[in-house]
Length: 209
Image (tube, rainbow, N blue to C red; front, side, top):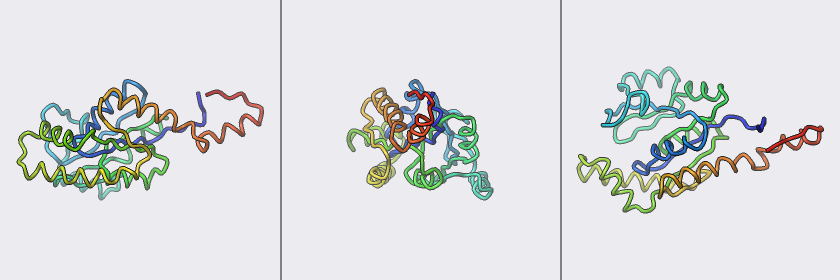
């Protein structure tokens, strides 16, 4: 095992409807990590589970967490608050495990400031037309104005994709997860990540992959 590899924050971001949660579930079958469960003030949706999908809290509870300095990042989407607990992330890292964050673009920018070594992925849809269909299928009860608002927000977020380490098109979930897994593996082979191995080798130690 590579003793130089430290547990890392892994960010999976992308527009609403691109399939971040589904890809993360598929990635879980390929590698070991913990998923940071975000807090939100929005209502729970059919099929979601408290403390697994999200920590569902009131606006007052959310503001209290922000005031206490607990939140690593927060953002507002469609009038609801979303955020990640820094304490929860730190606890996972302290246990020597990677932690994956499923967050919005604005949240990713905040994480980048706190964890500059985070590995960041941005998921793109195969096309804007397919993203629109996914949004309509997932939010079938929403009116046209709301859907168009989501699409406009998606365009703004997609424009931020070049700020991330990796851009992956989420066409087939299984393939997308495999690409992300491969990128994480090669990320740790970069020279600046592996530099400590050079000193260990020169000191007479036997090193391995």
